[in-house]
Length: 375
Ligand SMILES: Cc1cc2nc3c(=O)[nH]c(=O)nc-3n(C[C@H](O)[C@H](O)[C@H](O)COP(=O)(O)O)c2cc1C
Ligand SMILES: CC(C)CC(=O)C(=O)O
Image (cartoon, rainbow, N blue to C red; front, side, top):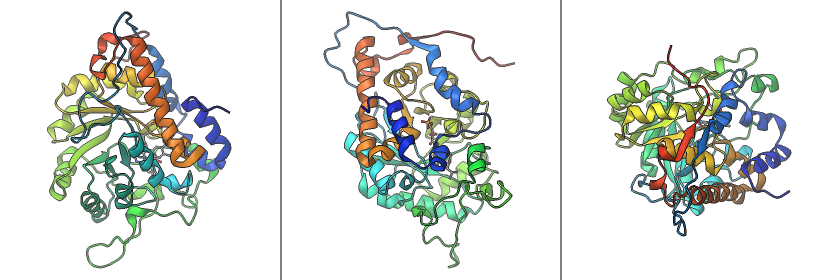
């Protein structure tokens, strides 16, 4: 089977990976409405292809540098947990692919390899360390300090997971991590008094009680307390992931956040929330260029990336496709996935008469169909 699109990688990965793991990757929360809408909503936007523009030179590089680095395209690999379930070198392979392709990666708190190991594998690409804030703040504090020491540029604070979404596929499969899976960032943690801390995994189901295990993440996070606390323990930038409305973007900026990441966690958390491409315009308009705006959720083609850039995103990220690439062919599979996206973006830009990312604007697209409106 020729692997030409991300859909092809998804199909091949589904044939290679054990069903309960593949279900864990693919599944969303509730009746999967947001998961599906993340994809479907892209097709409500159409590109106005302009012709007779000199497109003999195409430049996919982002309009602005990210942390002073010039990447090859405004595309990156969003944080997702447990890459060794896909391939033995796990995040080392994913990050290596990002490094070779010259795009950034955000590393999950729940990576199997530690932040320092991944930074060594991809010194230029490993920029974001995604943070879950745990009820035991000492744990998160140590994760942050280690990330800073390893050279990460920003903490990507996941704001949409006070509780774990209801993922029925995982509950039905009684999904559990294999015993030998490492949690690299949680090794040798202590409570400051010399006592070792072990953290239970939020996705694992405890017998008869799906909530107990997700209880490790702190549901009391808020702008007024959490951001000053984070700023008191690190000099890294703090970005907020999980924003889907302009009001929250404004509150995040008021709290001193350095960047906004529009996301609904790939439809895995609040079901029936907005698809991210529909939420983007409100966020971009509220932010008014004060901080960068990034987006993830259902991005699978160059046209999807083009549409998000046209609405005003500075950068666009993919989650599941990296896992599919890994499952198909390790690091080379992730490289293939990223090359497919970059080539597709480049061709879309050429055919749309927008030779550089700076040429892509709201004039480049139209939207049809009913809009979400406030009541
Ligand atoms: C298997 C899996 C694990 C994930 N783990 C994390 C995580 O540890 N932290 C986090 O902030 N987001 C996590 N995410 C969400 C992604 O960062 C991202 O928001 C989402 O996958 C984007 O949607 P997409 O998969 O449609 O591209 C995870 C997503 C998947 C599919
Ligand atoms: C460990 C989990 C909380 C990882 C995650 O964010 C997810 O599965 O969506």
